[in-house]
Image: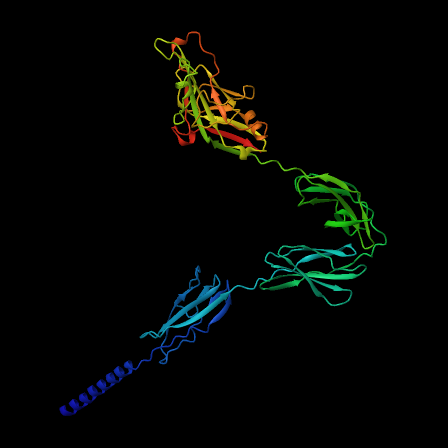
Length: 518
């Protein structure tokens, strides 16, 4: 009996082992689930997108969990998933572009491979709104004026269509963005025209506006009355505005022009401009300065022309160009006279050549300890300006000298005259110096009290004579005209030393002539 129980227990144990082994073998055969993120989508930007993971499945029939995530989004997008673990999460496609979303599912044991869905968002085409309020007005028998209301803010322009009588519409013209009028100058007299307008852009065309029908006026039977009271106003060097009185009500326009006499009789009409009917002014451009013109205005229509009287005017002369220049001296020199030296001798008075020294102007008194006398210094300066100012109108000329060394006694003045003959620095002495023009014009300036500011002489009158050819330019002489003192032995040193071409403290402070001329 005991053996039977042992056999039964062994059979039960073996059965349990077989069951457990079978369960273990079944676990190893689990099939991974498959994710399905749904088909790719094309949607309108701004739409709410619903993703669909319902087609994901597991071959073993296990329940699935879901994990959605963005793989990529358009740059600048702030899109996010409403619930990344839901079967059908949503997101807002906030800007144009491609959104790629990945889905992975899990059956409780293993993850599936990822599946993706691409959602492409694009904006709706922005077709412009149709224009409205189209009107057509017959201006003359040759033109119709169209106006409409621009009802859009994204058009590239407008297309105008026209039909004649009961015929079909054909394209007449296109206009630019924001245009709201057009003149049809291709019409005939006494004819019915119907118009319509539509806006267009790169996305397409709007609907048509209302239609507008008009009949052009009949041909005139008489010439227009001639304009009158022709005037020229606001005349400049190159322009003038003509004004006139419109005396007709049937002109097609006005022509502005001149007349050229023909031999042996008649005139040739030279048209300068053509303006619209009812115009009463026109500005001429491109005229020549200092020129006399005679202009006329004539009204015209299909019947003929009628001309006004002429108006004669002369364009202005342009203002002269003011030239401002500063010229440095070409050469200069100073000479010395010693009152104690016999002038007829060959001593210092006749051989004072100092062209490498500063320019000296003035008289020094009391030159010897026992013998009273004086030294007189004169300076000569030449500027090569003949080709510059010849034939020009000189407005200002300033001779400017900068101080090299101040005088001991500054209570004096120096005078400038124009030289009357030629001279050369290498041969100039007191005895051989050229004469000068004693009479006016001349210029005077006080001896300087500081060495900062230059001494200036207004030599405009002298240079003007050189410019107009009245006198030859031989340069300037500068000297002290004051008479000797009674007490000459007291020691009055009234000579100022000025910077010269050769001796200067600053290169730009050499002797110079400031000029203004036309």
